[in-house]
Length: 293
Image 1: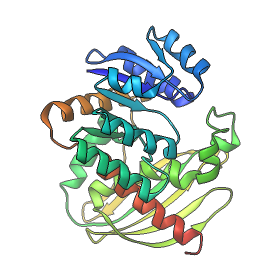
Image 2 (image 1 turned 180 degrees about the vertical axis):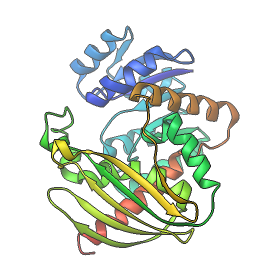
Image 3 (image 1 turned 90 degrees about the vertical axis):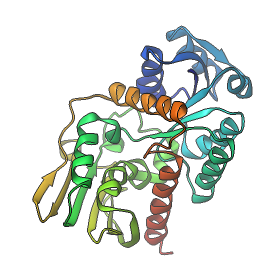
């Protein structure tokens, strides 16, 4: 499969470009970015072509991987799908429900495959754990703490305008939801939402399976307090999410495998654009409650 990359920021440099370049099933055709000089630098680093015109890139490839801010991603994903490109998207797929719905409509109208990259979801230990827990019954509650120190450390993502604007809810919230939803079921309603220190938010979710979950999300945690904890409690006891030994490159490569499979079979992946839209809808509902709507 011929694939292009949209985006040149830290995430594109750390994950997308090296994983696409190393993947045996992909022909990494080229890079487009909003800054041509950065796109050229990244393309040269991986021995591929820089594109000045994104529509020319769409015409030259079978698929695109996107590493751009959500609002920019959504607009270009619609254009790419209409050009017949399969989509390897990043979370969240859009900054609003309307933008996310436009992506889904474009994907379905064009009949292209889509996969949304939730890093944790594409780690093999997590995938196995989710399958095991989804097959169990009697879940009572879930607890997720996704605490980052992006804004309290020298993180390469600290200057990201969209993260500054949208905060932990939209940046790490999708990771927590991507694990909880396939086990506890869809969210029937956001029962409560409250602000904490910095960009920290606390959510209480009511799930279709009858369980509830609590989420604490932050990008402003002290470095020593950062980390991820997720556990389920139910009839079988307490079950924690296992730590993964796999890094982001392995996870992204598995997401690319999923896109290849979805494009070959025509079957939807569990983390497709429609799932990404559902995550966006839940985030928007929580944001509305936090803003007093």
